[in-house]
Image (tube, rainbow, N blue to C red; front, side):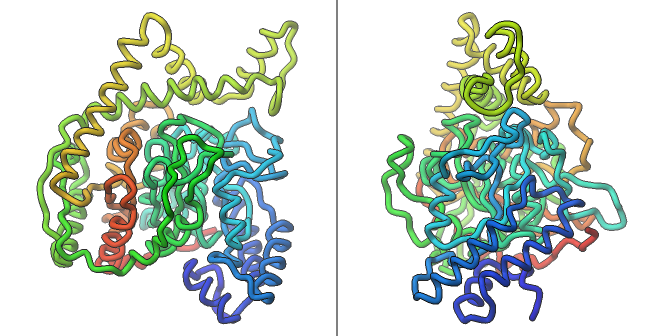
Length: 491
Ligand code: GLN
């Protein structure tokens, strides 16, 4: 039998349906692939092989009874900020090491309801704060891709670096991820995979360890556009346990893949053409425009004039919300506790030891911008900017049906390259934070390789709740790009 781990999610589901192999065989193939690769890639922070085999057997039994769900028997990886009942969930932080939630996140519960199997928990930046996976308390993930002729370890991006690396290295069929400012799309771009951040409210945040609640949104990373669509249809859905969850129907997103996009109007925003952006990224963007033109789309230049304020606004709002969300980690109820002489002392020691440097930086920035003297100048101002950015998109979407931009301003960079310069790290998110601020869906797909043989991504941004159009456009671009490159197995 061909290597089961190289299958797409769709092909694996077809194979399971036609009884070419069982869910247990599939899970075993992944368990052994992970065993070999993980010491080198560090994509999984927790492997759950026994659980995977047990879930796969139960899945095979359900299928035998004629009760197969839409993802029946699919072996998946789960980002470590989704709470999984009885299974350690840390969000990449020392402060939560050993924490086994007594409940399941809604997104993962939806996947298990549909028959999926869990292989383990995936590495990530601590509390999803980062763009390179280097803030993880478990150490960085290595990108399965390397530049041609080089042995240098590259970042898979962040914060969902474990998810993206695991999908790219065939260590799961697809993975869950989350995106507060780009954490699904940038790692997808750095690893040649497909990722979508859906509309804010599409996926329930219940049981997802919070970073910045008004921006956080779950979504999938997969090998193909269709795989991402299949995953999202299972993950999404209204949930009364999250007051910001949208009470709308979840479409069968895979039905949009393969549809004609003739006559759709695509906006190309002027402000995303940055000075100093690598020429290859600009060229690939132009190529993307050509692919959509050839498919019958009408291309328009549009302006999103407040784009340049998005990054500063994001790096005020996200830390402000984080400083509030992270106040719960006080050593009293769960996670790490470092005893001090007094209550205050216990709080301080626990947080000083439990949080890493980037998380402390965000908590300090957040507390500062929310403090009495600075609230108006920073936090309120940033909220006003956020509104302007959303209005920019509203204006653009009166004229166009979707926008096309690069996903990130560079290809994967070397581990260690930007850790000492937080601002250089934050600049990675320049094309992705805008959709989080506006609550809009954004999809990244692999569009080509740069001269060093590293994947580059393009981003499609859509109207609220119009993920379907993004899947149709991405399907057409995926065909045109014919991106088949895989990283060479060095692990
Ligand atoms: N890189 C961004 C940050 O560090 C976004 C992270 C995310 O989307 N979770 O905040």
